Each structure stands twice: as C-alpha cells, then as structure tokens.
Length: 630
Image: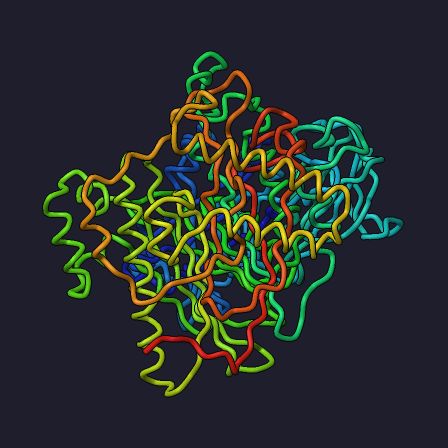
C-alpha cells in the first residue's frame, strides 16, 4: 500500500506517444477528520502545475466533503517554492524538480517512478496441478519483484500481510501457510478446498506490497483424483523429452477464443449456441486458461503455432508463462478490432526471430500477382464481400537456428474463414497465403544468395482434406493412401501394441463415418456441410509450390458432436501442418483416446479446454536440404 507522507509520481514510458500526449500519474494517501483515502490523478505533461493544484483541491474537497480549500505547494531541495505556471513535467522531472509537496502544512516526500501496480488479483480458478498466475497490471514494472504464495482456510477481508522474520519468505498472512516463492503456483492435492493467496514483494527501498486472494477454493479439474486430463497421457508417452540437434517438435493448436463462448447467456439461451453440451462453468476463461497453460508447455514443442488466442490470455497469462518456460512468443492480433489473434512461440535455446512479415489477407488481394483472383471474384460478389472484409491474417516469422544460423525456417501461421457456405473464400485465402510465403522467401533471398529456407505452414484452415482448398496445397490428394501412411507411422511409434490396434480400428470406423457424412450429409444429425463450388475456373488459380501434410489427415481435429446436441455439430479434420515434400517427418504424435474426447459428449469439456485437439509432429530440418523455390 502507499506509505503515508509519500507523494508518488510516474512518467509515461510509452515510446509511441508524443510529448503532448503523455501524462504524469500521481498517487498519495490523504487524511482528513480521521479518514484516510487514496488520491489518484493523471495530468498532461505540458499542462501548467497551477491547473494540477486546482484539480487536486477540487478532488480532495469532493472526496472528503471538505469545506476549506487545501493549500498545496511544490518545494525544491533548496527550499524554493515552484511557480504555478511551469509545466507538470518540469515540476516533477525538470532540471530543478520539487522534492517535497506540502498539503495543509503536511510534508510529502516526492518518490519518482517506483514499481507500482494498477491492479493485482487472482483472476483464474485454482486447479490442482495447473499453473496459477496472478493478473498483474503494472504502472511501472519491477523486474525483480517476488511472488510469495500461501494457502489457508478463509478469504476474510480481515487478512493482513506483515513482516515476519520467522517465515521462510520473511512475510506472513494471519491464518495462512507459506508454500513457495515463484512467479506462478500449481496447487497440490493437499490444497484441495483451501484458498490461495499471493503477495508481491517489490525490490528496493520503496516497497509497495500488494496481496491477492483467490475468490474460490482450490478444486480438481477432474472428477476423481486418478482421472486424466485429455492431454496428460499423450504428453507423458510421447512428449516427455525435449528434442535437440536437427530434430524439431512442431505443434499447431486452436485454443478457442473466449469471445466465441456465450457464457453470459442463460441455460435456456445457451441451448441454441455452440458447445451447449458443455456446462458453462467449464467454458469460462477463468477455468480453461489454467488448463491451457498446463497443456501448451507440456508438449515440449520447439515451435508453437496457436490460433484464436485472446488478447487478454496472451498479455496477462500465456506470454509471461511461456517466457518463464524458455519461449519467445510473437503475437499478432487479427484485423478489424477483433480481440484475438495468432501466436508463434519458439524455444529460446534453439531458435531466434529474424523478422516478422505478418499481413492481412484481404490486403494481399491488391497485389498485382493476385489479379487472377480479383478477376475470378468479379462474378462472385458475395465471396468478394466476405474475403475483402474478413479480419484473417497470415503470421509469418523468419527463424534461425541458435546452433547453426544457416538453418532457416519460415514459420507461417493462419486461421482461415470459418463459413462452410464460402468454400471458395477458403480456397482463395489458401492461395493468397502460399503466394505471400513465396514472396517473402524471394525477398529474403535477395539479400542472402543461395540460402536455403524451410517452410512450416500451420494453422486452423477450416477445410476438410477432400476439399479443393486442401487440394490446392497438395497435389494428388489420396485420403486412403494417407490413412495407410498414418497407420504405419502410428505402428512405428507405438510398437504395434494392442492399444494401438484398438485405436486404429476406432479411427478407421470414425474415418468411414466421417467420409460418408461429408459426402452424403447429416449422417450424425449435423448440418455443417460445405457447398460444392459451382465454378471450376477456381482450379486455374495456381500456387507456386505444393506441400506435404506432416501430420497426415486424422479422422478429426475438431469434435463438437455430442449425443443429443446436433445443432451446428461437426466432426472432422480442419488443422494441418504443411512442410515441403522433402522435409523428413520422423513422427506424428498420436491423438488422445477417443473415449477421452467423448467422455463428456464432445469438446470442450471439463478435461479439454478447446473444441480442437493440438496436432503435433517431429521433423528433421537440415541445412543441406534444398527446396524447389526460385
């Protein structure tokens, strides 16, 4: 809390702002008639200090119902009283700034730019085994701040933080037990039904500590202690170890943006929405985010391609957490003020960023090289309206190997248009993506003659493997042959165990059902059916190169069909990781057991934070590999 008789001021550290747009922020505690309240104020750099004095006088009068005006003076180190007409910035940060402020003959010492929190709370649900990160809004960050975690039996407002030399961390909370000092905390089984508290301890002499307490008690994310989350067995069996050398583990995952969950609706209203089979309590971001944090880093991937990442998720939780786990995250928001976007995250000890070439797909229509697409769209006004107005982007990040800078990767991430009525839009968006990838490769090669660049193009493409949009990315699409390839890979990975055979039988059964459902419609009562393209001229629109799908074509990567909930239901493969055909695919990580996917009808569910399953593969990238680009 703010110490009495300290007057805190902060500069504006936003480098994107001009001086005239910057503001000084002020905070102090003021006591009148036995009542103490905290006074905040924000004032322009260039406004005169006299105006700030008048605003403070009015604010104090209104806050305390004080009749007489408060006398306010700014005093320098030499005892000089500063004039009212100098600017706020000169008053507090000029060549001879004030060192004290007098308010009704009470001296306040000026404290500049100390660490400060605008907001500090535990906004996520404390789930056993899942990371719990405090929600922190820094006014000025303290990079050396410590977070001390405690558990206790109540969340009374009477809880107090105090210095305690007998405590392991030097701090105690009455009625709570200290558990650890860490930027995050994973609740343990013995914490079940307890509350979690965290205290942030600032470094330096001017410590301003804050405490936050979880609003709910610790609970299990599973029904029973030994039950598994949908991803745990998959991680334990196939992703426990990190890779090295020229082997890379790649993950692509649509994490389900919270803005698409209608959690504010009543139970009756929710019946007509997506995921109506999933109780609201498991759709809330406060529940799903801890599961996602546990899941995403647990695959030990070298490159993460994430879609539908909420701005709030990435800013407050995901990016800080991944940084703690050794990742650099690059986030690009979708256009048109959509509050979600894409992340490419890379392991710091293996790769580093050497350029970001993210672009809005609708903007690529204007390129001369895409004139054939514009010509096609002349006869498709509805499709043109969709493709030109959608917020879809392609995120492209140029990566280099830490160990060998000659190993270069162009990581491309996208999330194409969702509407099944506009398959031509997805087709054209896919073409725009590939052409733009080729443009960036050419651009890089202009400055690096004879360099070799590998491409990994991943994301949620929102089209099925038999669609023309899929075919434009890969020649001679043969679903059955690819099914045999995937079965062979899984046999190699699982050593032909009985479990694998059963899973393959189930996968084959689901594949047949999915195949007929796609072709003949509504076999399961679903109505998600692509309209066939009427104009074959779209096939004349070419791409400069083709890919292999490194993860194959599983029966589904998205599963939202639960028994009794058939509205807008879908089961199918929408997510892909594309690489050049010569890139060696070492392993495709098998999917979770179908029984886990359908344990609660469909996904998302209590044990699954998204309606998609992450697709994961391991590939070999060698500098000597040559691609077919010119």
